[in-house]
Length: 239
Image (tube, rainbow, N blue to C red):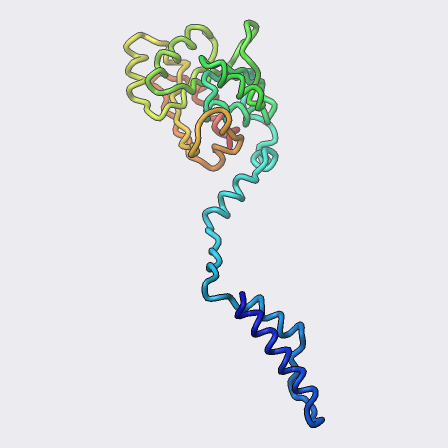
């Protein structure tokens, strides 16, 4: 500001006056670079104060720069085997698609919304489900009020597949499945405790589950193989 410039000019004037004196040797000389370097240290009283960096934003930026290769530097080979079908291409479903696809797993996607499905496929979360699919694991990632019905339909459509869901509620879904006589040996409820401030396939990311808790909620008759398969999915996701 004006105060800084005035100080710089005055310092230069004092320097010239000292050099043109009686010939006495200067004990201190203020050079142009010395004087004007103070411009960086003097702030006008009305100038806005610099904002301090928020460490939370720094951590968020560091996390947002994480690549798929960094996320899976340890899990270079997928523990999940066979084809994985994901029903629901929102934030959780598409993010799981990204992480499994990055490990070489064959992921097929299905969604009632053609727009959501197109976005997830275009962004690389998997491919569209087709008539020739034969999934070994089905992941239901739809809203909780529709989860039980979709789980039941997937158990019926794929009689050899293990089915899980990622809904945030578990007891009500299990009660609904028990009430209709679903094959609970192939069903394992689960809940990855992860999310973002935004939803939808466009906000999906492969590192969404990295370091996050993932709760497994098997039924009383879920087989060890079913439980192990869903644990492998969680591990591949980085949970």
